[in-house]
Image 1 (cartoon, one colour):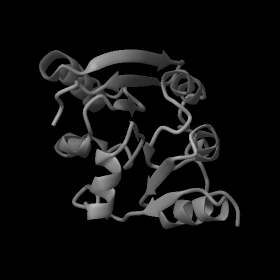
Image 2 (image 1 turned 120 degrees about the vertical axis):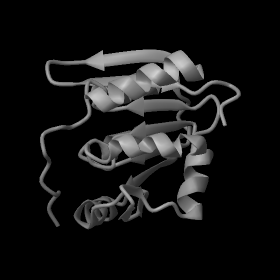
Image 3 (image 1 turned 90 degrees about the vertical axis):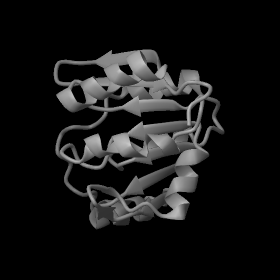
Image 4 (image 1 turned 180 degrees about the horizontal axis):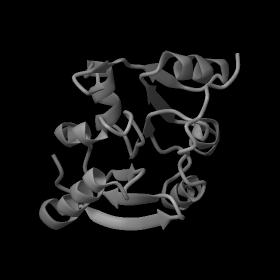
Length: 166
């Protein structure tokens, strides 16, 4: 089976390298939205689970023998199953690279599942809805800005949830 067609919006390669310097190799990583970087991410962090809504990408992840959960979208976000909520609430790092752009702002209502002291990566943080959310999390909720990785098209912002985050 061939890899599904990419839309050209792959996460910047420095993101994985930056995370490698921040997290232990055995960190529990949850990647919301699989892509061409998923194999490398799971190579760096073997305890990574990729959450994927698109069946063709789930099939690709399966073919690559990667750890993933195929979770369909429901109400503009991944269907909130007990297993998904458990994965999020136990994560050391959550990469927000899905669901697709127009639905990604719906992560706001799911931040309660993100644990305290969790590294959170917001891909495409140059988009207004992501930029506004990140600013609010830092300003009003005590999230810590750790890193911003930019190139000519996009920005990825890495934050950390506060110690008392619920």
